[in-house]
Length: 167
Image (cartoon, rainbow, N blue to C red; front, side, top):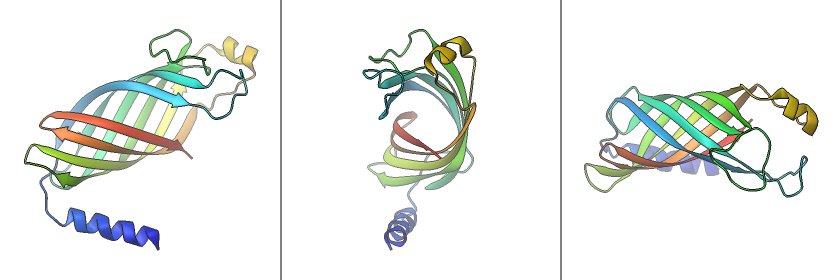
């Protein structure tokens, strides 16, 4: 019942015909921060942090558009006690995402709120396997997930808060 309600609201919002992001590519960079709920390695170690750079490709102009994205990033190999975005012992990740983006609310022609939902595949490589052996941690080299985000668009500038959940 709730899904039908949300889909109806989404269709109504999109049917307003609001002008969205133009088709094209957007280069972005940002910080990655995760708080872990299980502390298997160290009781006070509950953070993984790092940075990411990427490229969004938008394949349609308007209120609803298709998105293809690619991310390259570095994040902590093991959970740590404090957040350190550029520290050592990082692993490298490459992520491919595909899905839909849509405009939620327009404040003016240049300023609007938008969102997205994408399927994601992340592959992890370039890490120190000896550190993993000492910690008894295992890493999945490939992970599927779902990504959503809320974006404030101001002309060509986009400020985004993104959330991803692994499957």
